[in-house]
Image (cartoon, rainbow, N blue to C red; front, side, top):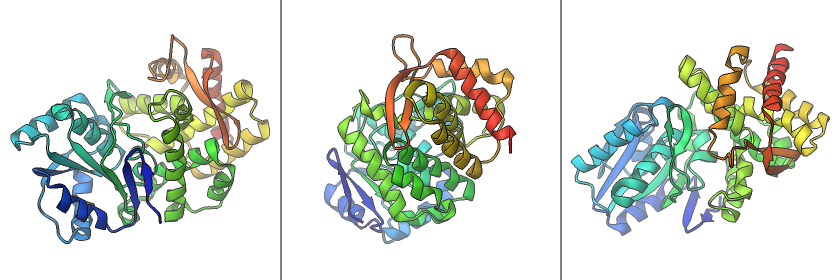
Length: 356
């Protein structure tokens, strides 16, 4: 597949990391670091090295896996490790892992000594179609997702679908939610195609189309002043539910499962605020319900979820701002939603799953 050029860096697809080999040879970095978590270090690092002819000219920085570790304390530890390894401004960090690794690694690299180069090699479906593309980095503060971060572009992104073979089914399903979102906000035909797809066997072409959609949006609005906000469909409520679950129940929801919840809730809100047809809501909720496992949001959590929504970084002037659908394949942004309607959307979600 053809590489995608995005704001001066390239997104490569199934190249066997051949361009990376040339890049490392030509750029003459003083030091190369590979940043991974315990899981990707065990399952993905050997694949990475084999693709690069048993490449060993790097220092490994390893962190614990999980969203709960994407915080400032872990950043400090990684910064100190870079200092201990005498990393200078001509060093390179290769982020090898899922969304937590690319978010955290990108943030660490973009702030260490005011910025060193980094490359993203996503190893999960979620990071391939979302986190590694678009130039956003971020860490969580007190379970509020991505509250601190930068807009920093990697030198390149390498999407190698061979890494998907290392994933459990639940992680594939997590990434699939972002692909569904891409169809809902930009491409009805793509959404319809995904409805008949098997998320256990995502094709490179489907991944390419999702990256293509995100790239198109990001190129028009790289700093999220307008159109890029449509990528947040499902995320305003989804992030709040995910944060609540993380802080109260440990890792009981994947990111994609939370976004699936958010898309159902925000499709419901889209009827009132953007004129989405009731039949479209039924189509969206029916499909998501058929794919994602049951999850009930307790009434006792509604107030806490509402407060988390109000901390969303996209809010402005005291208003909660949503990206909502006017029809399948079209999305509006900066939609102001009342607290009452937001709570109604949570109740609607519970009704959808209680009717299984």
